[in-house]
Length: 230
Image (cartoon, rainbow, N blue to C red; front, top):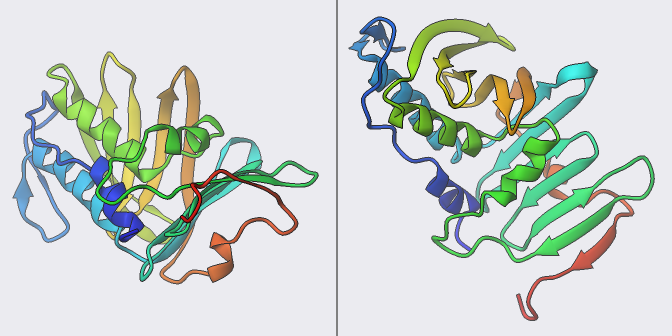
């Protein structure tokens, strides 16, 4: 399989529609004056570009729980870990693991096909457990851009020592606030998804990864559903 980030990028579509917004221009990180629609497009582009980065990010969830997102290149691999579960995408397999207090159980399926758009269900499991992934945020930004009644306000903040640009989206389909760091990493998200409140905030960022992050949990039971010869 080609780089996993190549297939994940299919979800990171450009935001090109005009918006109904508060204010009419802002400054990007280089000090250029840009419109609000350009701002949303820039955030989507940052998240898209981050799919080609190598990094480890730690997140705070409600109730003191934590989650992590880890990516590496050559070969491209991604791992999303949240309380009670883990999703790993590598050239060998897409692995979904349930990690309760007892023995973990992992189901191995074929990795995303070359140039195929990943199924939304690939990330829905993490979202249902409180961890929203960058491709889902890109989709939300895109939907907001296509909503002529959406109102977007911009702000800036610092998360885990890194500058982040934020958009506060007010729309009939569900309000949310998303922040993206200068590196393109998801900084924070607050909003309702499928009727559930989701809150994540970056607490740590490193441009290195531990290779063990892509391994199955030690001692996990494995159900291999990959086609023979894959």
